[in-house]
Image 1 (cartoon, rainbow, N blue to C red):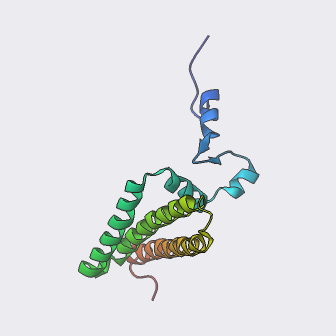
Image 2: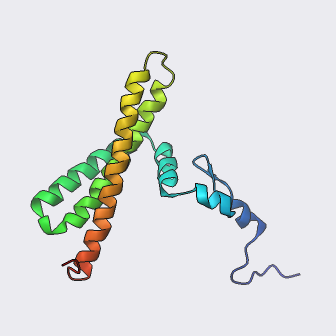
Image 3: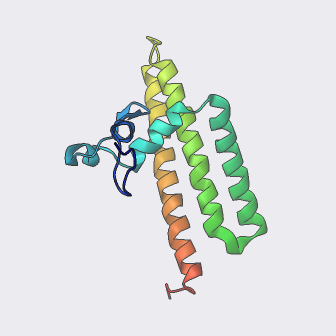
Length: 147
């Protein structure tokens, strides 16, 4: 009896690990589940598993880093945009926690609606900053191909 596995073979234990929950989202390999899992759901699930302190550090650290890079090193705007995207991730997580904590209060629908709007704005700003970071980096790496 051999216990040896060929490269590429997976054990039953490894298959079970691939289909476990990550942050409340079922990760599987079927086409239907792949359509439901996207970068926003994965980032949201990750943000919900972080502590408040971690989210504050990410939000403030990313914002400070982005500001300092833009101010002191204007040629590194692509890196500053990446830091801004990280700050938006932390801000989104903090606002999501605020919505979750207010959902138990009966008299907070207006506040919750405003916070949801800010959370959506953080997601849009983070997405725009991430796209800017990627495209700016490509422009620098490829020698300013966007004439």
